[in-house]
Image (cartoon, rainbow, N blue to C red; front, side, top):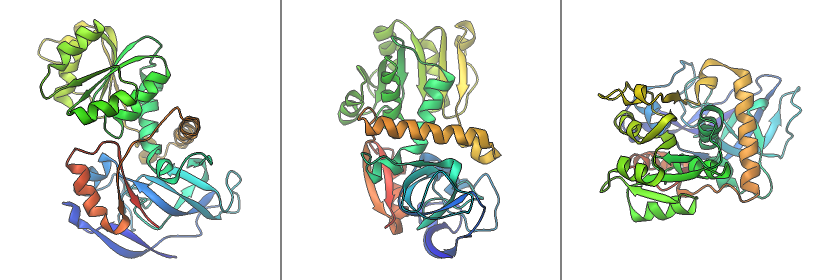
Length: 332
């Protein structure tokens, strides 16, 4: 079947994204589902893949986008979990191989779909999967955040950061967040941060230590330099989780001397490596996060929504680094 999609025509700047009509392989496997997409969400990884290429090689055009929300239009003969007409969301594609969600439709294995509750709007359902999986794996599966612990979230008003604050608070943890403006501070506080630290004019290490006496958990979404500085704000035997890759220790061997544990979270690994049990677990995380959103316990902040044809503008906006919350594409 034919559909319109934003295709990466070359590697480079946002303007390499062009709207084209391409083929979508359907029907496919017995357990696959055809989803007519209504919204897709952008993630920083999309910029990486636009600039450097996907993890997987494929014969099809390269279409970005991991997060999607839409309506089930057709199902493979063995599909049992969803039916035609269901509202669903998912995290799949966009790394090469399977086409991503910057498109009018997607073919998704049923095990990776989550039904959207009636109380969750379409835009929230589209923006929720990747950030909820990331935050859940980082804070619940890896660092096992517990009630009363002191947690620092870097980039607390960003797409992942504002979700991480809420997930930590749901455990009863006390949360501080680094931010870069008064507006972002208000967002982080609304999500549950009891302390906000403007890293542009404040030594975040000193502020975090003064607040906590030593952090039990730190959530890094800023990179090697910030992560290494964070080591000095940790309590002995603290846990540091990063989305950016673990660097070496600092010059004083602080992570070693404090017996810190360091965790990587790269939630695209199951898709990249074809780890089906892990993919099922991630879909279950999305299901649980949707339930929290339906109950009003998890709120997705929306920064801006662009039409599909303006995906290049959306990328340029995301790269400015000033988005408060999630950036999305409207497909319909």
